[in-house]
Image 1 (cartoon, helix red, strand yellow):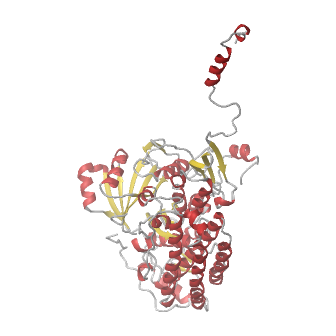
Image 2 (image 1 turned 180 degrees about the vertical axis):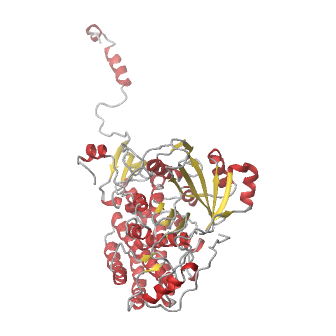
Image 3 (image 1 turned 120 degrees about the vertical axis):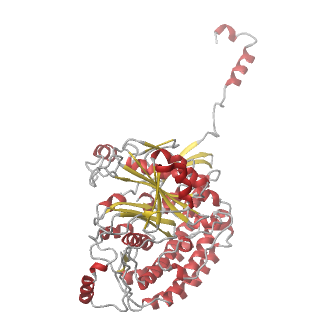
Length: 393
Length: 211
């Protein structure tokens, strides 16, 4: 603006006009622009080293992107450079809170490839330990998930009771977490003296504990506010995104590999598949609680009906499956855990692919949290029940 | 699965009681020829043709581009690379294979078409699995199946990350487990188990070696 026009009577209106052209106020105290923030990889609520990039409008989530791979150890590459037997302990390090399930899936896949079968007694031992491990995994999920949302007590309760399961594992095979409990062809260890008594004691000990957890949470006003209608996903979306396990069942799809394509000795037991209706965080909580009760039912039937006999099938000392390929999957606590193995007839797998449930389920995080608040992202990560060791492998 | 394919010799019946180790070993040695999966035995189970209405339907449609077999009770379709988007879409739309379990690849460096790419599919209504396999050469790409199954997004990214196979039409094809700037695709057979992108490690981690 020239000095001459400054004196003119039009000056005020001119300035007013130019002010209107400005789009933002001079001092933007309240900026409603989109905000990109980083959650993790070092964040207590991301259950390990998961980094989520959040696009926010205020506190509302517009979109997310997961950055994973911080725990990548190249498990599939390691498998190609180890013999079948040597690789067995590695699978425990994927989903390390459900190591027994990982081992079961791997051993059964190799057995299928070799066309051998574990004896009945081994199958029963496998079912007992796997279901105990499912309970332990769900306990850890419940404790940490509730802690994320702000309820601290369940963590102490679940860890106290999980200890009883880990003691059984320790007595059985010497390890508490990465158990390496099974061998290709059966089980290496016969049950210890008093195993059945310990398991039965656990059944009577643990059944009322589930009620105790439920008394803390199921009708808890804060818990319901934080979980109902949070992270809703429909059954159709679950199927399209390949989501399996309790998340799929809470969305109303009654599908469990233990029933759909029974493995081990599951066809011999009577149990139900609990499902939810709304597909929200609260329903997933109820489904997992019901699953613990069903696991107790399975363990009870298995421990009462455990047959006598050998624990190892007829497998050669050197595991050398014939040329071929196999896909075998089991219902791990998190969903469908699959192993795809290609054998070239040598002692090492030519290719071993793990289909990890946590990895695939995590993909649903984005559509589950859109439109929610940042605090709900924490709840949804918890409810997906991911283990980063398995996501990254 | 309907037909379970067994090896010629049925597995021996389980023993009534556990024998001492030495005796067991002797028994195993004497019974060696009858073992179901004896290591050096060339006549393991072999793939047999898979016959089903599904296969008949597509064979008449696609002819020689499609081969259907069963191995150990598991069905798979080996299809020509050119059929890939069509056959996957038909399997989902017409045959109700609504769940894409996994996508993965296998590297055969000595073959002309170096890669086998596999789709492991499952149908909830039929409670049935099928694998679709195709062979592609190094450097060739495949059409993305994200529009058929959204779950293919991360699975294809992992195949790209580990094998360097690209998928046309993928919304965001980038590395998923390894860092973005990494060189090499570790699940290729020519990538050694101790190999790493030293330059990346030195620049980004500030250490001499990750080993």
